[in-house]
Image (cartoon, rainbow, N blue to C red):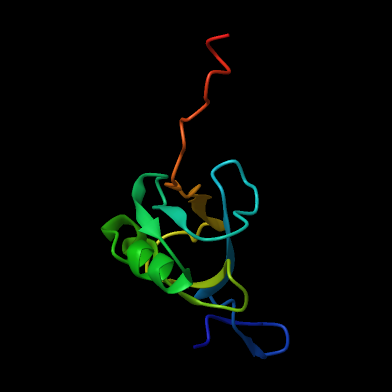
Length: 118
């Protein structure tokens, strides 16, 4: 698609719009999330759900109407890198995911003997 023609030399050139952008997942504090699972946020920083891996993150992010109006995510190299393919409007510089600290359940023994009663 030719958008402009240089009048002085007649050479066609293109000022093509950005159709894809490399974006990185950051926390809402602009830090590296470190690992999955993460809480997935839309472009308005509204929580969408929990992703246990990159594929789940992409599926959840792309399920948001607000997100898909701007563009949709596809995978890129690494755990937290994506390509955002433009639909409408400006593309964000990052996507957000806050790490979830797993809750562990264990066998806690509350037998302290007589230590607390002496």
